[in-house]
Every structure is written in structure tokens, then in C-alpha cells.
Length: 366
Image (cartoon, rainbow, N blue to C red; front, side, top):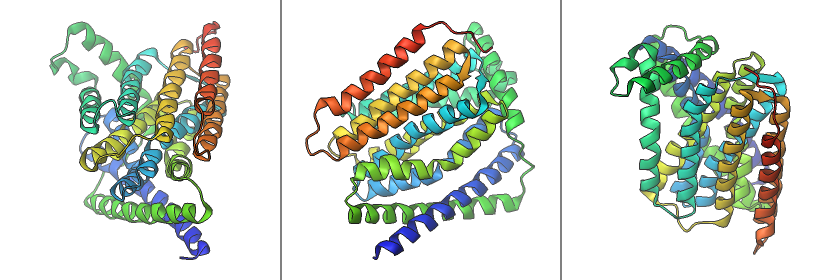
């Protein structure tokens, strides 16, 4: 297929997939509102629908044996989410206040998912074990969000944890309620959501195949195609939504979008299909992305917890770290036998600078 045709197909597939995913999100929100789902679960539902392009692209690549593209799309989009959703959102808003309980509620699950992802990519545990570990944290988290503050008392948890979770959930839902305004769903919303989901799947498959063909023609490594190009393009809907929420001061909603999106990406886009098809031999390039994913998650949440929010400086730091990640990945991807310096030194510098920044006392935003 000519390069011009591949390029047109890729751009058209991206446009159709992203547009259709927006319609899926809005219709699923209406359906969830009609079913009486809590604000927290509506946020998760919106994140899952927004993740449809990257999940579909990743599953397509893994099914075709393109492990680096598949793993790169999921993990690379998670690294991109941290920079574009949290980092850029903080830069645009200037300062975003966050409740520490909200940070802990979502942050612990987010870090646990990143750890399980890294362990699986490194080959330390099989995909099935990583999936079980993630579900062990994600399912209770979803149950708590679904229960809402009023029904937490019915869950078999200790009284002191019940009170703590009630405050955390109510603080998160207070902002999500303002960020999500679903109209009452109708029967046609179910049909539209189902039809548009099929369009997202088809367009994402076409987009992934065109991107792979373009990469082959121009000699672009698979890990760059998946971990940078497809990762960024498929993450645009969530990025736009998060920046919009940040500009309106809806910090908890922005944080929830980021962490839920990343957790669902790993679960549905990587661990589940890898459990069925396998991931192949561990790759140093995929390992590098997974390490950066965990490191940036911890760094972003550590700064947010210390300051009870995100500042413009912290946002710029996260974006800068992402640019360093891109440079490191580009060097490693284009080197036949990359030495440890290209992979390890940039990460050590970012972690060291972040540690020095965390050691400084700052005024809490809340």
C-alpha cells in the first residue's frame, strides 16, 4: 500500500476512533445515570469508554504477535497520561487543590497496578498472576466507589475504615458530580453506544495496521510506534477532558480520570489479552517504559500528597520528565545493543531531581 494511502488511513482512523469514543462516553454516562450509578462509577465508566481506542489498538497488536507495539500502546499511553493529564492540567490551571484522602484512595491502587504491570513485563510473574493481583485491588476499589458514602456501612469493613472511606469517597464524588452531567438515558442511547463502540473497534484496528505499515516503511522501531505515536494519539480524548477539568478547578475529577484510565488500560489492554495469548520474551524496551510508568506515577503522587495538590512547577516537572523519557526511549530503540547508561542514567537523574524537590518544604494547597 502506498505511503500516502497509509498516512491517510491512519489519520482518518484516528479521527473516526476519537470522535466515536466521545459519543460512546456521553451515551454510557447517560445510561449509567439512568441506572443510578454513583458518581465514582460514572467516572470509571467514562474512563473505560475513553480508553477504547488504546485498548483496541493494543489488543489488535498483541493478537497479531506484535508484542512491543501492544505493550507500548498501553504502558506508553499511561506515561503520556501522567504528563498530559496531570502535568499539563496543572500547568494550565496553575494550582489544583486535592484532598489527601482522595489521593490515597486512588493512588494506592494506581501504584499497585503499575507495580504488577512492571513485574509482568520483567517476566517475574506470569500475566495471569499479574491480572489476579490487579483485580484484587481494583475490584474492592470499584465496590467502594459503587457503594457511595451512604451504603458503605453495609460492606464488611472495620468501622474506622468505613469512616475514612466515607470521607474519601464523598470528597471525590463532590467534584465528579460537578464534572459529569449525564442526562437521563433512553433506549436509543444503548443503540448509539453499541454502534459507536463497534466503530471505535474497527477504526482502531485500521489505525494500528496503518501505523505499523508506516513504521515498517520508514524504519521506525515497533516500540516507538506503540509507546509514543499510538500511545499519544489514542490518549487524546482523556487528555482534553482532564485539561478541561483542571481549568475548572476540578482536581479530584482530573486525578480520578488519570488513575482510572491507567488502571483500566493495563487491565483490559495488556494483562487480560496477555493472559490469553501470552506476551512473548521480555523486551528491554518494554521494560524501560514500564519502569518509567511506575517511577512517574510515584513521583506525581508523592508531590501531590506533599502539597495537597498539583502546582504549575510540579506539572512542568512531570512534563519535563516525560520528554526525558522520550529521549531515552528513542536512543534505546535505535541502538542495536544499548548500554545501561542510555536507559538508566536519565531515569536516575529524574528520580534524583524529584527527590531533591520533595525534600524541600512547600506550602500545602489545601
